[in-house]
Image 1 (cartoon, helix red, strand yellow):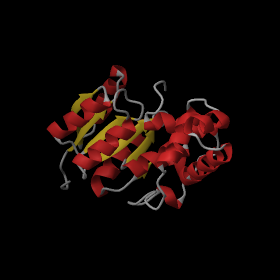
Image 2 (cartoon, helix red, strand yellow):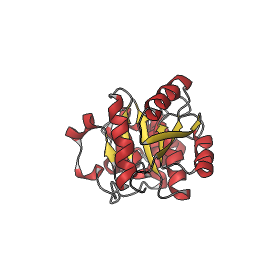
Image 3 (cartoon, rainbow, N blue to C red):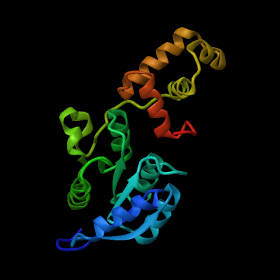
Length: 218
């Protein structure tokens, strides 16, 4: 991004009213302009490939290809693009997973409009990361820097399978029966997965499953 250039922003949100409000906000800035709008994740990826924006403002819970999957896809195809996630979720699990996926910014929908503008400018200018100021007090080192979460161990297939079934409502005994493993082994996989992801309970597991697109209803 060259000094003095206008920031090209793409909006990805399934709510027309939200997109309209964001467009008015961004277009009112002398250094920004909205170059496209998408109502689902897949369309956002295709539009980004076509118009090559500097920054994408993406709703985490966008339909179709959700925000997490869309971000991963975009970073593979356009590594230099900045993706600012706009969400109502203030959970650490969401923040950590989205930064690990390649998101450059994380802004809460309930924050003042200036928070989003700061995020757009910060992520475009230095290819760094920007996290909503209301979340900063409980941020830890694993959430910041260009390699946020990079040292985290990945889930094994069996650990992910156990988490998916837990999120779907199955008991440890039922999971053991379905996967042909003991209840103790189920508990071990669950504990390992939760430790790797810094999850603290079943509610966190369900939120993580939603983010991964494992559950249909959000």
